Image 1 (cartoon, rainbow over the protein chains, first blue to last red):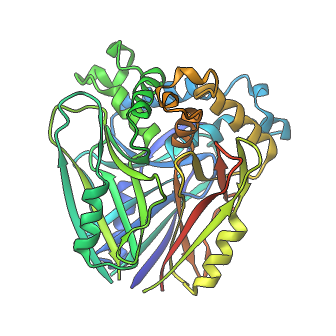
Image 2 (image 1 turned 30 degrees about the vertical axis):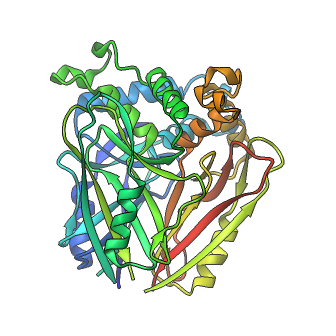
Length: 139
Length: 139
Length: 139
């Protein structure tokens, strides 16, 4: 069994944003030399997500609006987590909706994705350096 | 290490629906010859889910009503994704609630599920052929 | 390839609660002897979750309040699942928000977690014995 590990670093300049990381994950699959296996891609921070959906700007606007409806940032005083001095409780909630991680099949040495599947880093408390873990196992 | 790959195809005749695929996934586990490992089951389309819950029709009605409350289909004009000519933005949102994939343990050559765990394909934009990927690794 | 399997049992005395299980999962990783691999941690019951987030009591209060807003327990008559005699339909919904499972990388024989990542068992219909599956594969 082979394994491969890589951290991808991001610094999203706004509080929230979506970054397509499909190409970077695919590069790690090639670097791993794994032909058949699984790749785990997870946010290492608890106010961010890794998820798979469409690379379409209108949809990303919809996600932004929808997540603000389901878990609004303001007023920050509505969250007990923010009593600790943080202002990011909403980000911990939004990340549960969008998920921490994806697991993707590796087949014939490449990401085995459907026709429109793209892997995204979802940032909900940005303006600082944060990272994603790519872990690959297989043969 | 062994690996096994199978696509399962579905054509749900309505816009939304839930299909129990536990038996089909179990058949792939047996076909793989893997005794100890993991099986990844993921929607290959971004307006559908694979999830694990109860095979109880009342609960499925509850999911349908609840998801419509959290991410209503109409009016379709409320979503910027639908400006592209699509009418399925809500399906991209519902799928995030229900999830893209499940990973299930394989033990002694079979799905290692709890007593009531059943694997479902969740369709949120049906009336066309769509597919699920089953990828198995182990020994 | 090595594999390792363990069931962790819980009896949360209230209907809902969060239990930090990071230490128990880490102990299973060490017991497995796996140096490089993946660990799957999943609720075996469909009214409970395994998720990764912060071990901060204020945040857990926020999750409790937020999940009650998104999927209220009462009135129980609003759910068709409860027509079966159950009163836990809301727990089946809450669990979809928080997720069934996490997959965590194993690197150098230990859980490969970010600085604040902690693994939780999320109970939404407690006051009885329920369990979590830990399945490890790797080398």
